[in-house]
Structures are given as structure tokens and as C-alpha cells.
Image 1: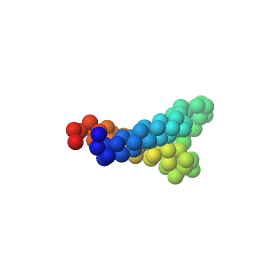
Image 2: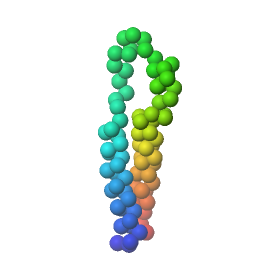
Image 3: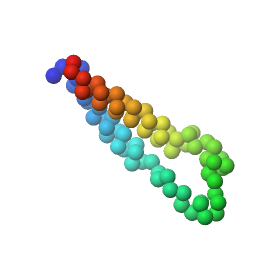
Amino acid sequence: MSVLKIIVTIIYIIDCIALTVVVLMQEGKQKGLGVIGGGNTADTYWGQNKMRSKEGVLIKATRIMAILFIVLSVVLNMNF
């Protein structure tokens, strides 16, 4: 096993663990009681600035780690 493949495998394992943790830290997409009162989160301050909040950072991190996961999966399955 080459040194490069070992390094990529270690990065892949770290990415898998980090992706699992980030996904579990995210809140659910349920509307809750806001639907009863007609609450629309897009009109509120937090709805407009969601990507700057903690939840927004988790969403960005999830996207980046998911792309890295797919790329590393393809690289590890190549015969090099």
C-alpha cells in the first residue's frame, strides 16, 4: 500500500467522522408551532440571515464535507 493511499485513507476516515458529527449537530427542519400562527421565518431577521448563524455554518460545513467524501471515495477506488 503506497504512502499516498494511506494518507488519503486517513483523511477519508476523519472526514467520515466529522461529517457524521456535523449532521447530528443540525436542527430538524420541522416547522413546529410557527405554522399554527402563520409564522414565516423568511420574513424575520433570523430567516434572512440564516447562513450567517450557527445553523448556516453547519450547512456549509456539511456541503463541503459531503463533496470531499464523494471525491475521496472516487480517489480511493481508483487503482493507483
